Amino acid sequence: MPLDFYMVDELLSEEERLIRDTVRSFLRKEIAPLVVDAWHKEEPLDVRMIAKKFGELGMLGSFIPQDYGCPGMNYTSFGLICQEVESIDSALRSFVAVTSGLVMYPIWQYGSEEQKRKYLPKLARGEIIGCFGMTEPNVGSDPASMETTAKRQGGEWILNGTKTWISEAGVADIAIVWAKDVEDKKVKGFIVERGTPGFEQTSIIKKGSMRAGDVGELHLSDCKVPEENRLPKATGLRAALSCLDQARFGIAWGAIGAAIDCYKTALEYAKNRKQFGAPIASYQLIQEKLVEMLTEITKGQLVAWRLGRLMDAGKATPEQISFAKRNNVRVARFCARTAREILGANGISLDYSPIRHMANIESVYTYEGTDDIHTLILGRYITGIQAFRREM
Image (tube, rainbow, N blue to C red; front, side, top):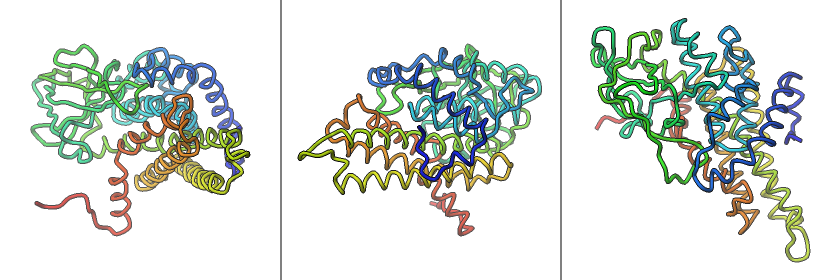
């Protein structure tokens, strides 16, 4: 049963509920049992196997039209998918959101018709895997200062640079790489295929978070990419940032999924764990923690639902997306830590999910715009004054 204190289910269509429930059942039966060992051993899940299964259920690029071999669902359904996936593990939701919002979306919005026909159906079916190359070793929150360069040379582009902390970097078949044109200084997008000379993909190990997923680096050294692999409509940083909005939308929903799983785990534990002759759920301090978790989750659910409807109507603004990402990840962070407290010493055991969610959410709190960056986005909206830069 979903956690639905304010009866948000009544605001969903029958089709949306069916999609959510189908995804939930599939994940619980086939994917959840694989996660704990993968996280514990830091042996990333078999994303190729998972991609095909997700593709069969229409979980990848779900909001992209059927014209391109995609499911053609609405954004609310995409959000519900992300919610259910992150209730299992943040790395899985990252795969879904990256594939949908950071790989398929830019091809759909900024690619040529040939690129759309070539890549989107295969990505939707999980036949190929993509990644998004934007963050760099020296450039995170300030993408306008990216150091990766692109130089036109006849019918090719020569790319040089390094991208880091890239989900699915080590296994991706294609990468959407953003680079600054050395001539006009504008950021442009490129589709770089695995095996291209000068293109190296590596994985980062020894992580304290997102341990069940692949995260790595992309290295480009005089990497030659044909003009036909440049995203023709992506000129300027705005295109890249619009992709981030898509992924941030998925995070806003996914974080609530993690929070709900933490709450349910803590509630069940509190009802069964006895101390001083009574279940700990009977004590005021524990009840207060549960009430605070329920309150924050319910507010987050309403924020996610409203943002979904705004996205469906084409009315959502980047600031509204930042609001939802910032708020709902804070909710997940609070619920994971609170659930860990309620579980006491057992809270650090991987037999229970909160400690894993707690570690994963630290990554979610940081990527796709840190909490501080989203605060400044909203601060700029409120005051009309940007506070990102200071002249030194």
